[in-house]
Length: 354
Image (cartoon, helix red, strand yellow):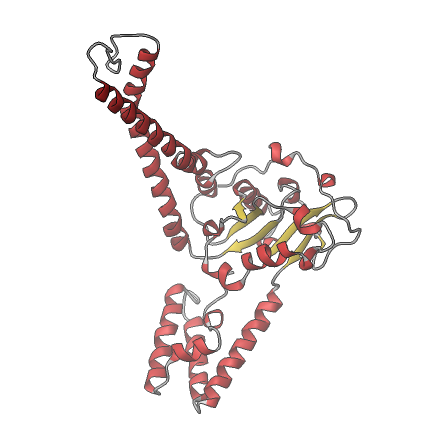
C-alpha cells in the first residue's frame, strides 16, 4: 500500500528554484538536464536541497532486523517518558499550588517549622528534578516524536504506507544543513566543489551503499525524505516511474532555463565493467599461484548454484562461498586471502544488491 503522491508545500519547500543563485550559465560537470522520465517526481522534492536516490535491494528480512532496533528503542523511550510524566505530574501540580499560595499543598514548606538545612535540601532536590526532566525532554523527547509523529512523513508512517518491507525500496536522501547554493554557486561548481568531494562522493561510495540499508544512511550531511520515498513508490505503482529511472541518481535544481539537473553516478555498464575487471584480477592472482584450475572450479560452482530452482537465492549465495572455500582448502589455498588481495569479490560471487 502506498500513499497518494501529493505536492508537499511545507515552509521549507516554498523556496522556488529561482531563489537558488549560481554564478554560471552552464550546467556544471558532471550534471546534465534531468530526463523526462523523472519529471513526475521532481515537484515533490525541495529545490533548495541536493538529493541522492537509489534502490535498496537488501532482503526484506535484513531490512526488518535493522528497522526493529530503532522501533524498539523509540518505543522504550516513549514509554519511559510517559511513565516519568505519570509519576511527576502530581509533584508539579502540587508545586503549582504552592506557587499559587496554597498552604495545604504537600510541597509547601512552613517557614516556622522548616530548618535552613531542610529548606536547602528541598531547593536542591527540586532543582535537580527540574534539570533532569528538562534534559530528558530536550534530548530524548524529540526521538519518539520525530520517529512516530514527524510531518509530512516519518519512519513509522513510511513503513506502514509501504505495507512492510519490500524487496525493492526507493531511498531518497536530502542534504542536511547545506544544499544547491553550496554545491553549485561560486567559482568551484559541481565536481570541482568541495561539497561534491566531501559530502556526495562518500555517500555514494560503492561499499557504503552495498553495506547499508536506506534507514542507516542518515548522518550529519544527509537525511531521509520519507515523504519523497512514499511519493516515488506511489508513482512507480501508477507506472509513471520505473525503479530503473530512480537508481543511482543525484538531483539538484538550477535556476532559470536549466531547472532540475541530474547525474547518474554508476550506470549498469559501469557495474558490468567493474565486475569484469574483478574476475580478471581474480584469475590472474590464481594463475600466478599456479592454481588456474581453481578459477574454473569457482566459475563452475557459481553457475551450478545460479541455475538451481529458485534462482541465485541468499541460501545459494552462502552455499557458493562454502563450496568454493572447501575447494580452495583442498588445494591448500586460502580463498579469503586471495579475495582480500584484489579488494573483494562479493559483487562477482553474488548478485548485485544495489
